[in-house]
Length: 67
Image (tube, rainbow, N blue to C red):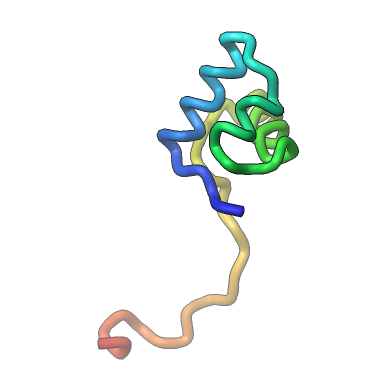
């Protein structure tokens, strides 16, 4: 499954607000219905379309060392 970028997230939310079902929105963007449901729930909770920070291992090398 592909991830939705911020532009497509905004479009999907607009479609939901317009009254289009979650199944139809999911088919339109090629994602699962649960992805659209979680998107709507997250926006209602946080009020933001952007991704939330994810945990991860800290960098071991600096940007300069990577070059």
